[in-house]
Length: 287
Picture 1 (cartoon, rainbow, N blue to C red):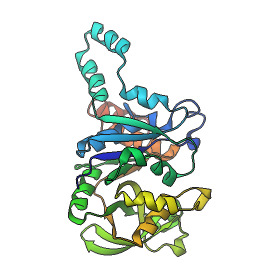
Picture 2: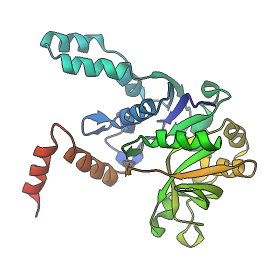
Picture 3: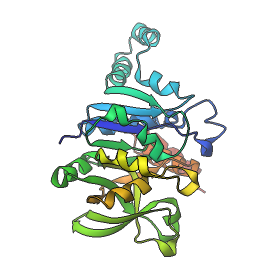
Picture 4: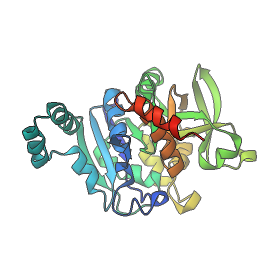
């Protein structure tokens, strides 16, 4: 079955970026010249996904405004004669068919996914976490969709993490199926290094079959008192095969200030318009 829909979770408080995120959604923080969530929507579209469901919460109206039209601004740009900028504004509003659902309480990633159930319906769907920006020649989700076409099972994106960082990830116990593809025998949420079944950490891209919603119904609060998606995936593994895919590309963890700054510097240095001048600036301040 073709994956036509994507769920993007954008309902968190963004507490690690306070006070910047007191009134600005974390997903709207600008990474060089566009907000984080636009990178995600563009990856979904470039992967062939037609419909996008964004899970939001109170105070997140700026996300919908970003992908909506602003006729007053368009008229100002039109009068200035800046056709290139006007075309870019219109491109953003026409990127995809987007709808929004509200997570009324922040009860964890698993709960955020569950509130999209009616919008998703009874079909497989892609799941994106905006904290993870992945730069690759072939979009990471497009790579995963190719794997899904071969296995027709849920797919989890993974990458190698250092042993001391397993506490920050869901970790997969893998059995190799083919190059970069593993059957997930078990998933563990944020294990201690000595308890981790491997060094393959789950990152913010998934393709999930609709059975995941039944598993989420059975999932009790786990680490941090939240409904953990990893726990629901573990329940799913007991009933059907789930695979992990080690994607090709570079992931930037923009969910914390240091990772966000690192991503900003690297992407700015590669930017086609400002990259050259920015690299010169970096060299000028090197101690």
